[in-house]
Image (cartoon, rainbow, N blue to C red; front, side, top):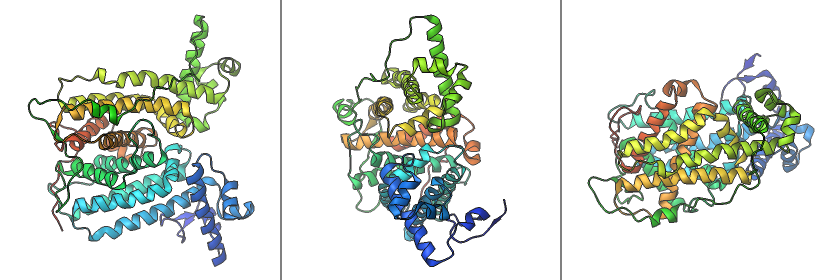
Length: 486
């Protein structure tokens, strides 16, 4: 389809002739379009992307439904416009920080901006986690914005004359991981997705400071030394023996939800052929989730993937939602066991302990990327799936926290800080796994050819964040930098 340069495209790129026809020709039309975009942002942030409808957006804007389609093709089209406006405002704020003369000063200012942006738009960001490959425009938007934020970050580092210099290619994994760390941590916090498993916090100052400190540590392996600034996270790698931190801080920081998944629990069929049929159905559902995601998955897809008739599926399950719910809970249950700190080797070096924990989590989702996508789709709206995933996350978080405390020294962190740090680390792992294995782009695929490279890099980033020390060996990250003031 031919394209031409047209005003109004939030990316400033050529847009299709069809899209250009929908742009207003009058000032009144532009006001109506802006009203619709504002209404879309309000509706999506109130209801979530999946639950929001074109009808609700038009009603909120007090615009006839026919006029809506004069300016926007569908829901994805207007979500793209609303997201573009929010991203443009955020990036404009970031670019205005050019006067910042230090890396840590920029980190603090960026996180203040990001806090406000995601606080007001966290449900719109959730559209990224439920996007499918078929949502090409939305996926392209998020990938483009991530690339832009990466470029801004990289340019600033070069302007600081960091030593040793960082190449753009070498910054790919670390930069993406740090951007995902901040965005997904705040998104989950504002969406309440970690409610009940971590000490809740609305302490804006603490959140901004910890995110800034951990990103600074990941880049420099040093604590910020701004005049008059006292870091919140001061853990250092332990050398020699010392009394362990009190286990009470772990108990205070993490609460593993104990609700039984009774709504999906059922005894296995007694007959061997029935058990085999059930196993085929569940395996086919997991394959279907890998291809289609939860929202787009149809029973016909499950039939095709499992080789089991629809009648046999209905014999075992009430509907598709009940089937997907059971498949995810059954899939998460052994993962929870594998993540338990009973599998941690306390005598191993710190990096090896982190690597083993990250490996369990990443490989599970690498082998079943559709499960991660379906969990992200259902976690905000399905209490059973939410509890099952939060149990997994909390077990993983407790294991990471125990490693950090076992191998660290310094003042004992508060339960609030420890919970926020470790759940943020898991948020970073989730985001990078999604970016690489669910809807990857070419640059990240090249930088991380497979799960092994991702696991090594993530374990090294956690090592830097936790103890401000770069682990020995090859892990795919650029060397720690020394940032000079401009």
